Length: 233
Ligand SMILES: [Zn+2]
Image 1 (cartoon, rainbow, N blue to C red):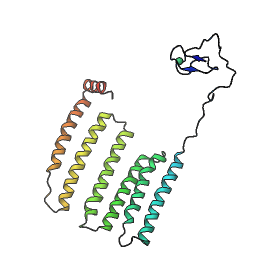
Image 2 (image 1 turned 90 degrees about the horizontal axis):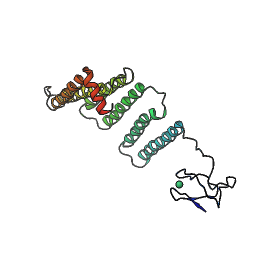
Image 3 (image 1 turned 180 degrees about the vertical axis):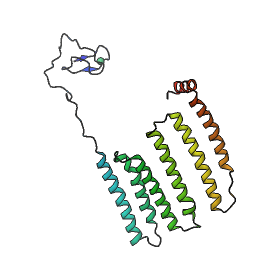
């Protein structure tokens, strides 16, 4: 029995090189017999990778069964309210969210639109189950449409214009300010109070300050290169 002179690991009689630290093995009393059967597989095995389509089928089946079983339970046993619509809508929404992970050929813009449509659909289910004072058309729909549009705009900047990280950060802050203002104004309209900026003005101020700094950095090449060098971006 030989032991590696470098790391001390026990060596099989077939080893001419330590399998752990790759130090050559020299044992005059027991020279390596490379023709003897190896104690481990000599060829690396490979397991076929899971196909994304198979995972999508699995997720689709699990979600469809969950939605179907809850629907049946709602119809046959726990009836009285349409509670299963929450589960069914959630399953549809999850499936829509999962699509781009398993269908890489799907356009990201189509995917964003589908996500926005799915969220609007789920809000629609809640609104149908709990009809209120028109919160769905006055708040949920415009905020969902605006969020989808802003995300689409961000995706276009990243994918088509190949904007830098600093430019994307500036755009993201500007979109955050716009969305916050829209939320406050829509809430004012929904509550039938005079429109005005209060809490959203604080967010707007922060975004304007940071955006001003980012735009200054972007417009001055020396500043821009220094930031990129220090932040590795
Ligand atoms: Zn060794």
